[in-house]
Image (tube, rainbow, N blue to C red):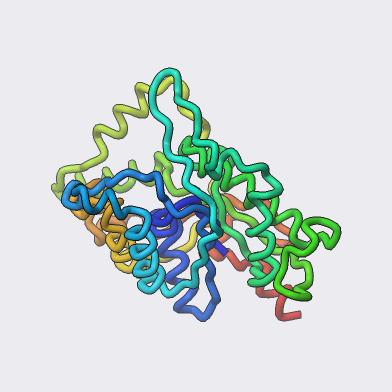
Amino acid sequence: MAVHAHPDDESSKGAATMARYVRDGAEVLVCTLTGGERGDVLNPAMDRPEVRANLPRLRRQEMARAREILGVSQHFLGFTDSGLPEGDPLPPLPADCFALTPLEDAARPLVRAVREFRPHVMLAYDASGGYPHPDHIMSHKVAVEAFEAAADPDRYPGAGPGTCEPWQPLKLYYFASFQRGRFMALHEEMLRRGLESPYVQMFGQWEERADRRAELEVTTRVPCGDFFGIRDEALQAHATQVDPKGFWFACPLEVQRAAWPTEDYHLARSLVDTELPEDDLFAGVRERVCL
Protein backbone atom coordinates (compact mmCIF):
# COMPACT_ATOMS: atom_id res chain seq x y z
CA MET A 1 0.00 0.00 0.00
CA ALA A 2 1.33 3.41 -1.01
CA VAL A 3 -0.07 6.45 0.80
CA HIS A 4 -0.06 9.71 -1.16
CA ALA A 5 -1.37 13.23 -0.74
CA HIS A 6 -2.51 14.08 -4.29
CA PRO A 7 -3.06 12.46 -7.68
CA ASP A 8 0.32 12.50 -9.52
CA ASP A 9 2.34 11.86 -6.33
CA GLU A 10 2.09 8.11 -6.93
CA SER A 11 3.75 8.53 -10.32
CA SER A 12 6.65 10.70 -9.12
CA LYS A 13 7.54 8.67 -6.03
CA GLY A 14 7.90 4.90 -6.12
CA ALA A 15 6.06 4.34 -9.39
CA ALA A 16 8.66 2.04 -10.97
CA THR A 17 8.79 0.03 -7.74
CA MET A 18 5.03 -0.47 -7.81
CA ALA A 19 5.10 -1.44 -11.48
CA ARG A 20 7.83 -3.98 -10.79
CA TYR A 21 5.97 -5.63 -7.92
CA VAL A 22 2.68 -5.68 -9.83
CA ARG A 23 4.42 -7.53 -12.67
CA ASP A 24 5.87 -9.91 -10.06
CA GLY A 25 2.34 -10.77 -8.92
CA ALA A 26 1.88 -8.49 -5.89
CA GLU A 27 -1.36 -6.65 -5.23
CA VAL A 28 -0.67 -2.92 -4.91
CA LEU A 29 -3.11 -0.29 -3.66
CA VAL A 30 -2.55 3.46 -3.85
CA CYS A 31 -4.48 5.48 -1.27
CA THR A 32 -4.80 9.10 -2.43
CA LEU A 33 -5.87 11.27 0.46
CA THR A 34 -7.07 14.34 -1.48
CA GLY A 35 -8.37 15.05 -4.95
CA GLY A 36 -5.79 17.73 -5.73
CA GLU A 37 -8.58 20.28 -6.11
CA ARG A 38 -6.45 23.27 -5.15
CA GLY A 39 -3.45 22.35 -7.26
CA ASP A 40 -2.24 24.56 -10.08
CA VAL A 41 -1.92 23.81 -13.80
CA LEU A 42 1.82 23.14 -14.09
CA ASN A 43 1.98 22.17 -17.75
CA PRO A 44 2.02 25.37 -19.88
CA ALA A 45 0.40 23.54 -22.78
CA MET A 46 -2.63 22.78 -20.59
CA ASP A 47 -2.97 26.21 -18.96
CA ARG A 48 -6.31 27.26 -20.42
CA PRO A 49 -9.44 28.66 -18.71
CA GLU A 50 -11.53 25.56 -19.43
CA VAL A 51 -8.84 23.36 -17.87
CA ARG A 52 -8.67 25.45 -14.71
CA ALA A 53 -12.47 25.45 -14.47
CA ASN A 54 -12.59 21.66 -14.60
CA LEU A 55 -9.38 20.82 -12.74
CA PRO A 56 -10.91 18.57 -10.02
CA ARG A 57 -12.62 16.38 -12.63
CA LEU A 58 -9.57 16.30 -14.88
CA ARG A 59 -7.27 15.26 -12.05
CA ARG A 60 -9.47 12.27 -11.32
CA GLN A 61 -9.44 11.32 -14.98
CA GLU A 62 -5.65 11.61 -15.06
CA MET A 63 -5.41 9.43 -11.96
CA ALA A 64 -7.58 6.76 -13.59
CA ARG A 65 -5.23 6.66 -16.58
CA ALA A 66 -2.09 6.57 -14.43
CA ARG A 67 -3.31 3.70 -12.26
CA GLU A 68 -4.16 1.76 -15.41
CA ILE A 69 -0.63 2.27 -16.74
CA LEU A 70 0.97 1.24 -13.45
CA GLY A 71 -1.37 -1.72 -13.00
CA VAL A 72 -2.32 -0.73 -9.45
CA SER A 73 -5.61 -0.35 -7.64
CA GLN A 74 -6.33 3.12 -6.29
CA HIS A 75 -8.79 4.73 -3.88
CA PHE A 76 -9.50 8.38 -3.15
CA LEU A 77 -10.02 8.75 0.59
CA GLY A 78 -12.19 11.82 0.30
CA PHE A 79 -10.32 14.81 1.75
CA THR A 80 -9.99 18.26 0.18
CA ASP A 81 -6.63 19.56 -1.01
CA SER A 82 -5.12 22.22 1.26
CA GLY A 83 -3.26 24.07 -1.48
CA LEU A 84 0.32 25.23 -1.14
CA PRO A 85 0.36 28.53 0.79
CA GLU A 86 2.80 31.13 -0.52
CA GLY A 87 3.88 34.52 0.73
CA ASP A 88 5.46 36.12 3.78
CA PRO A 89 3.70 35.77 6.09
CA LEU A 90 2.00 32.62 4.81
CA PRO A 91 -1.76 32.94 4.42
CA PRO A 92 -4.00 30.71 6.56
CA LEU A 93 -5.08 27.35 5.18
CA PRO A 94 -8.68 26.92 4.01
CA ALA A 95 -10.98 25.80 6.83
CA ASP A 96 -12.20 22.69 4.97
CA CYS A 97 -8.79 21.35 4.01
CA PHE A 98 -7.10 18.04 4.76
CA ALA A 99 -4.16 19.54 6.66
CA LEU A 100 -6.49 21.03 9.29
CA THR A 101 -8.52 17.86 9.79
CA PRO A 102 -8.14 16.35 13.29
CA LEU A 103 -5.76 13.40 13.10
CA GLU A 104 -8.29 10.81 14.22
CA ASP A 105 -10.76 11.92 11.54
CA ALA A 106 -8.02 12.08 8.91
CA ALA A 107 -6.66 8.63 9.74
CA ARG A 108 -9.96 6.76 9.99
CA PRO A 109 -10.43 6.14 6.23
CA LEU A 110 -6.84 4.90 5.95
CA VAL A 111 -7.23 2.60 8.96
CA ARG A 112 -10.33 1.22 7.23
CA ALA A 113 -8.36 0.74 4.00
CA VAL A 114 -5.54 -1.07 5.84
CA ARG A 115 -7.98 -3.44 7.53
CA GLU A 116 -9.73 -4.14 4.25
CA PHE A 117 -6.71 -4.46 1.94
CA ARG A 118 -4.42 -6.09 4.57
CA PRO A 119 -1.04 -4.90 3.22
CA HIS A 120 2.21 -6.43 4.40
CA VAL A 121 4.19 -3.33 3.39
CA MET A 122 3.24 0.37 3.50
CA LEU A 123 5.00 3.24 1.71
CA ALA A 124 4.68 6.82 2.96
CA TYR A 125 6.40 10.20 3.27
CA ASP A 126 8.81 11.02 6.09
CA ALA A 127 8.00 13.65 8.71
CA SER A 128 9.07 16.48 6.39
CA GLY A 129 6.58 15.33 3.77
CA GLY A 130 9.42 15.09 1.25
CA TYR A 131 8.83 18.80 0.74
CA PRO A 132 6.91 21.20 2.97
CA HIS A 133 3.44 20.91 1.47
CA PRO A 134 0.90 20.77 4.32
CA ASP A 135 -0.89 17.81 2.74
CA HIS A 136 2.36 15.82 2.50
CA ILE A 137 3.19 16.48 6.14
CA MET A 138 -0.34 15.47 7.17
CA SER A 139 -0.11 12.36 4.96
CA HIS A 140 2.95 11.28 6.95
CA LYS A 141 1.07 11.65 10.22
CA VAL A 142 -1.94 9.75 8.91
CA ALA A 143 0.17 6.89 7.50
CA VAL A 144 2.06 6.41 10.76
CA GLU A 145 -1.18 6.54 12.73
CA ALA A 146 -2.79 3.92 10.50
CA PHE A 147 0.27 1.65 10.63
CA GLU A 148 0.26 1.74 14.42
CA ALA A 149 -3.52 1.68 15.02
CA ALA A 150 -4.99 -0.70 12.45
CA ALA A 151 -4.10 -3.81 14.47
CA ASP A 152 -5.63 -2.53 17.72
CA PRO A 153 -9.30 -3.56 18.03
CA ASP A 154 -9.85 -0.83 20.63
CA ARG A 155 -8.82 1.93 18.25
CA TYR A 156 -11.05 3.16 15.44
CA PRO A 157 -13.94 0.77 16.18
CA GLY A 158 -16.11 0.34 13.14
CA ALA A 159 -13.32 1.41 10.77
CA GLY A 160 -13.59 -1.65 8.59
CA PRO A 161 -15.96 -3.30 6.11
CA GLY A 162 -18.50 -5.36 8.06
CA THR A 163 -16.71 -7.71 10.41
CA CYS A 164 -13.26 -6.92 9.02
CA GLU A 165 -10.60 -7.91 11.54
CA PRO A 166 -7.80 -5.61 12.71
CA TRP A 167 -4.62 -5.93 10.65
CA GLN A 168 -0.96 -5.22 11.34
CA PRO A 169 1.26 -4.29 8.38
CA LEU A 170 4.75 -5.67 8.84
CA LYS A 171 6.93 -2.91 7.38
CA LEU A 172 6.66 0.84 6.89
CA TYR A 173 8.99 2.64 4.48
CA TYR A 174 9.53 6.30 3.72
CA PHE A 175 10.30 7.43 0.18
CA ALA A 176 13.92 8.60 -0.23
CA SER A 177 13.48 9.87 -3.77
CA PHE A 178 15.31 13.20 -3.80
CA GLN A 179 18.85 12.41 -2.75
CA ARG A 180 21.82 14.56 -3.60
CA GLY A 181 23.89 11.48 -4.44
CA ARG A 182 21.38 10.29 -7.01
CA PHE A 183 21.28 13.59 -8.87
CA MET A 184 25.07 13.87 -8.72
CA ALA A 185 25.39 10.40 -10.27
CA LEU A 186 22.97 11.33 -13.06
CA HIS A 187 24.82 14.61 -13.61
CA GLU A 188 28.20 12.90 -13.90
CA GLU A 189 26.89 10.21 -16.26
CA MET A 190 25.39 12.84 -18.56
CA LEU A 191 28.68 14.75 -18.66
CA ARG A 192 30.57 11.51 -19.33
CA ARG A 193 28.34 10.96 -22.37
CA GLY A 194 28.86 14.49 -23.61
CA LEU A 195 25.34 15.61 -22.70
CA GLU A 196 24.30 18.85 -21.05
CA SER A 197 23.29 18.27 -17.45
CA PRO A 198 19.98 19.77 -16.25
CA TYR A 199 21.08 19.62 -12.62
CA VAL A 200 23.67 22.41 -12.37
CA GLN A 201 21.13 24.98 -11.22
CA MET A 202 19.77 22.54 -8.64
CA PHE A 203 23.22 22.03 -7.13
CA GLY A 204 23.70 25.78 -6.89
CA GLN A 205 20.39 26.16 -5.07
CA TRP A 206 21.34 23.44 -2.61
CA GLU A 207 24.61 25.18 -1.85
CA GLU A 208 22.79 28.44 -1.17
CA ARG A 209 20.32 26.89 1.26
CA ALA A 210 21.66 27.31 4.77
CA ASP A 211 18.74 25.34 6.20
CA ARG A 212 19.30 22.21 4.09
CA ARG A 213 17.90 19.31 6.09
CA ALA A 214 19.68 16.03 6.64
CA GLU A 215 18.80 13.37 4.09
CA LEU A 216 17.09 10.18 5.10
CA GLU A 217 19.33 7.16 5.53
CA VAL A 218 18.71 4.86 2.57
CA THR A 219 18.21 1.34 3.85
CA THR A 220 16.62 -0.22 0.79
CA ARG A 221 17.36 0.14 -2.92
CA VAL A 222 14.85 -1.61 -5.19
CA PRO A 223 16.18 -2.45 -8.68
CA CYS A 224 13.49 -1.26 -11.07
CA GLY A 225 15.26 0.43 -14.01
CA ASP A 226 13.34 -1.76 -16.46
CA PHE A 227 10.16 -0.02 -15.29
CA PHE A 228 11.29 3.60 -15.58
CA GLY A 229 9.47 3.87 -18.91
CA ILE A 230 6.19 2.82 -17.29
CA ARG A 231 6.82 5.36 -14.52
CA ASP A 232 7.30 8.12 -17.09
CA GLU A 233 4.18 7.12 -18.99
CA ALA A 234 2.18 7.27 -15.76
CA LEU A 235 3.65 10.68 -14.97
CA GLN A 236 2.68 12.01 -18.38
CA ALA A 237 -0.88 10.81 -17.79
CA HIS A 238 -1.09 13.66 -15.26
CA ALA A 239 -1.08 16.14 -18.11
CA THR A 240 -2.24 19.15 -16.07
CA GLN A 241 0.61 18.66 -13.60
CA VAL A 242 3.57 17.45 -15.63
CA ASP A 243 5.27 19.22 -18.53
CA PRO A 244 6.57 16.53 -20.93
CA LYS A 245 9.38 18.95 -21.85
CA GLY A 246 10.21 19.71 -18.23
CA PHE A 247 12.48 18.62 -15.41
CA TRP A 248 11.05 15.13 -14.90
CA PHE A 249 12.12 14.04 -18.38
CA ALA A 250 15.39 15.98 -18.77
CA CYS A 251 17.59 12.94 -18.14
CA PRO A 252 17.45 10.13 -20.73
CA LEU A 253 16.25 6.75 -19.48
CA GLU A 254 19.45 5.02 -20.59
CA VAL A 255 21.43 7.42 -18.41
CA GLN A 256 19.18 6.76 -15.42
CA ARG A 257 19.41 2.99 -15.86
CA ALA A 258 23.20 3.18 -16.09
CA ALA A 259 23.81 5.61 -13.23
CA TRP A 260 21.05 4.87 -10.73
CA PRO A 261 18.72 1.97 -11.65
CA THR A 262 16.93 1.84 -8.28
CA GLU A 263 14.21 3.57 -6.30
CA ASP A 264 15.25 4.12 -2.72
CA TYR A 265 13.60 3.93 0.69
CA HIS A 266 14.15 4.30 4.41
CA LEU A 267 12.85 1.45 6.58
CA ALA A 268 11.03 3.30 9.37
CA ARG A 269 9.24 0.40 11.11
CA SER A 270 9.64 -3.36 10.87
CA LEU A 271 7.99 -6.21 12.72
CA VAL A 272 10.10 -8.80 10.88
CA ASP A 273 13.79 -9.60 10.96
CA THR A 274 15.71 -8.23 8.00
CA GLU A 275 19.32 -7.42 7.19
CA LEU A 276 20.26 -3.96 6.01
CA PRO A 277 20.86 -2.85 3.38
CA GLU A 278 17.96 -4.44 1.50
CA ASP A 279 17.09 -4.75 -2.18
CA ASP A 280 13.51 -5.94 -1.64
CA LEU A 281 10.62 -4.28 0.21
CA PHE A 282 9.41 -7.77 1.14
CA ALA A 283 12.69 -8.88 2.71
CA GLY A 284 11.74 -10.72 5.89
CA VAL A 285 8.06 -10.63 4.95
CA ARG A 286 8.18 -13.45 2.41
CA GLU A 287 9.80 -15.74 4.95
CA ARG A 288 7.24 -14.91 7.64
CA VAL A 289 4.22 -15.22 5.35
CA CYS A 290 5.43 -18.59 4.03
CA LEU A 291 5.89 -20.14 7.52
